[in-house]
Image 1 (cartoon, rainbow, N blue to C red):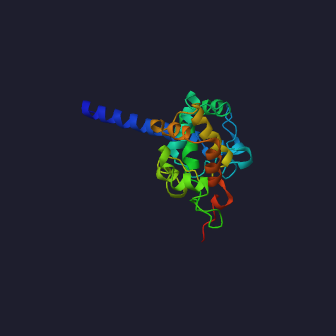
Image 2 (image 1 turned 90 degrees about the vertical axis):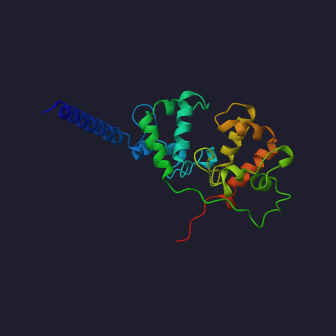
Image 3 (image 1 turned 60 degrees about the vertical axis):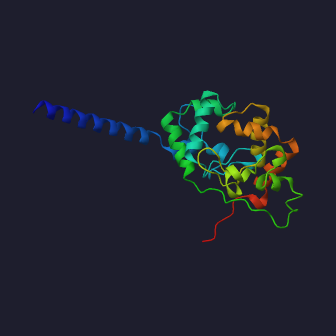
Length: 225
């Protein structure tokens, strides 16, 4: 075999070994198994807090993961693990997940059905009177607060990896995050936009807009067949 042939064979073998290693890693990160049972070395079953369908547990304030952008989910897991996003429950769980497992879980939840967009309830008070509706759909420009929909999409369906879906999230979770940004204890958003916006909102504003995205009329609806 010529020297050139030896090099080509070596490259081919190296590529094959890397491909096999990648396949082994993917196989080792069984997202469904981790979601249902945990990974066996520190990370409990995701569904224990986020529900078997990934829609979260509203009563406990645990967020919906189903249908969120995989890159957003992966970033949050990385941020929990590093401490960039502070959470006493999620930090040890994220630390117990390998990068491959975080990727697999993010892809798994990102592939589940997303929440339907929120629509204003015609039976509710008018937009001029409903603080939650105003903030969500029109904003409050007198305080340089744009509508939530301008970044998070119509009805809060989410836009890409940086602006997650708000539709279908528990009110308690949304309220807790806005309060965390306002207090400066959460600061992993692009360009610190949420810190600026939440600082302009009162506690009553935060509660109202959180309820708007999580109210019965705003919860995910079954799609017609």
